[in-house]
Image 1 (tube, rainbow, N blue to C red):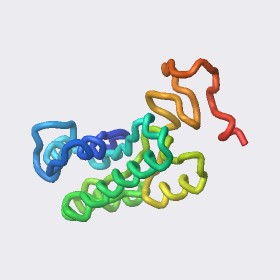
Image 2: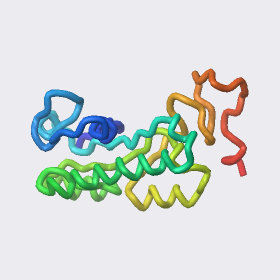
Image 3: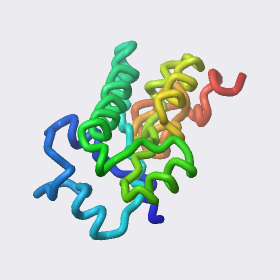
Image 4: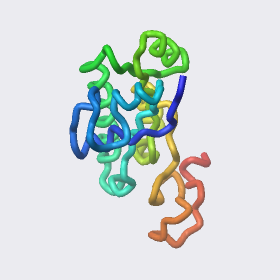
Amino acid sequence: IIVDGHVDLPYRLHHKMEDVSVQTQGGDFDYVRAKKGGLSAPFMSIYVPADLQKKKGFSKALADSLIDMVETLTKQHPDKFAIAKSPDDIERNFKKGLISFPMGMENGSPVESNLANLKHFYDRGVRYITLCHGEDNFICDTSYDTCYDRPLFLCLWWRT
């Protein structure tokens, strides 16, 4: 079983939908190349740009939309793809010849300062969330965002 911890497929398809159940011209992932390379479980990156956090609800809405897209791919191609929420799911799918789609979230802004959203995304299948990406957010600072002149590191909201 080969796992890739980060594949940007959902955000790629958000910008340009294409059928990844067959070989594609662009992008870094499709079924044909994954099978040829022995990839069993590419973590679908639920990437949300940090600038969406400026309008309440936008980050969460995009994250939910990207998760919907991953779920739709597995429903449209149940002979090729399956959601995986655990290592057992990955093993079971592997034995069936399916490529597993575990999910991880790149940038924690969709949590939107609401701990209930952590459970929401867990229930939807997200198994890891990076704190931030290219810009500071309500969770923490990045190492290279120059928008703010403050050493926040881990925001007070998460320290309680």
